[in-house]
Structure formats: C-alpha cells, structure tokens
Image (cartoon, rainbow, N blue to C red; front, top):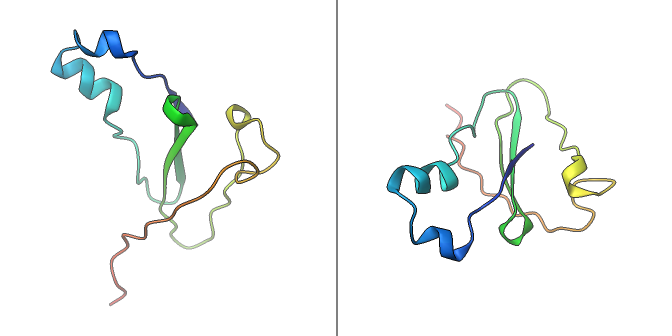
Length: 86
C-alpha cells in the first residue's frame, strides 16, 4: 500500500501546479489482476481499485492500518465501473 502525506494548509498556498498534481493525482490505480491501495493521511482515507480477471482478489490488511482485517475499524464503499458483459 502506498502512503500519501498531504501538505499542510500553509504550504498549499505556495505550491505550483506540478506540485499539486504530484500530491493529489493517483496514477497507479486500475492495474489488471490486482488490488491497488493508497493510504492518504488526510482523514486516514484508503483509496483503491480492484481489477479481477480470472480469479478472486483477496482484500488483505496492511501494517499501516494497524488492523487484523481490512474493515476492522473502517467502512467500505464500492463503486462498480465495469463494462457490461458481451
């Protein structure tokens, strides 16, 4: 799991467009056959994607969550943006 630490409110005022993109833009999501997770320190949010192919993908916990299982102390919201089967 990748960890993203966001800038404080004072630093935002001096950041360039490139620095803002580097801080907020998540480009490594939606890789075929895997789950990709990013832990954002703002509100302790986990943003992720799952792109299953032929087999199920396990959603395991990470040391950064300090939990026995992924949803031990957090809620989970899911948005399915898959294309329809032919």
